[in-house]
Image (cartoon, rainbow, N blue to C red; front, side, top):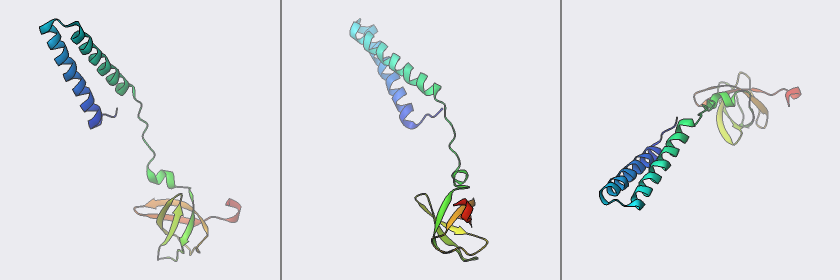
Length: 126
């Protein structure tokens, strides 16, 4: 259940508004205020019910999404010096066991901090 500051503020504001409207309705006997207070409480109940029924699916970790992804070498990788690869729309510093030329297609093996470890894609994989 995801209760951000905005959700909490809306629920509290509706409770306060409904309480004030119902209090004034009791004091003055106003049907309109009874209706307004009841409507605010109903809206509040709907918001709480929706929030309680949300099913939050945790997003995949960024490194899980990258593993096995294809990329292109933008700056040659010459171990032990890292190069730069483009994976999707992102540029990453990349390391490899063997030198990989600029323009070569690579596959992400794993991520470690700000570095991707890649291997060159073989012809049959392309």
